[in-house]
Length: 280
Image (cartoon, rainbow, N blue to C red; front, side, top):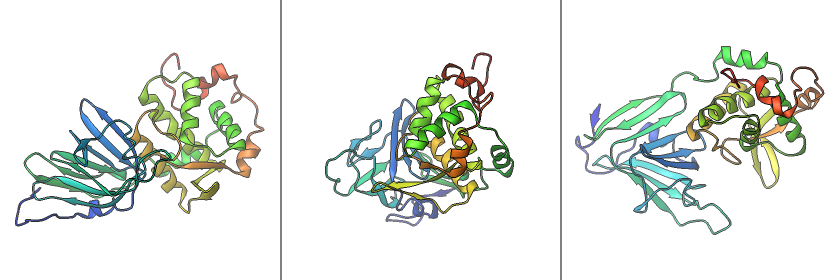
């Protein structure tokens, strides 16, 4: 651990802060344990209070959603400062450049267990990204060998008529009886990962009414989806938060499957991956 004040009179950077540049904020949440700001790549800033130009950040703060991080730096007293561009959900004009700040202690967590943390005494702890947490070879092989579940069949049916997003997954899980945030957070990424691994869908982004697939490997896509869903948490993911998904020819072929996967809607939760317990 290193003290912030050791020989420094101005702002300082860090390799893990440099990674934040260019990332977009997609979610904020506030609870008794503090405030969380989440980026589109699954980085999470957690601290007691976060301020946007001296005003406290709120739940799903519309001033922050869509803002892009231009720079990130640490001030001599340990305060973390993010310079933002744009932002402001809705049709109103983009916001002028702004600044998100938080005093120590704060914790910045990234995909694959990356960590940058400052304690109240101004000491810094850092850990670089490690190996995949979710997209291990064993997990990818299991997803690839899986059989479509009832919920997955219904998701493919939705994808026949529109691009799929995590909000569709949340809605079908809720209809199948999911109740707790932890259940959405566990089951949602698994459903998407299984369909991607079987080649039924591909992930990408939508701009100006056009779908553009990502040029990433399957493990990279799975790691991204599970990392960002976990970072956002629960049933909060929706459009433009993690990815968009387009059905493939393989997905259309699998829509014709029949058998135990094709349970009526009221029973869809029983054959859905991740279901535990005696009643779901």
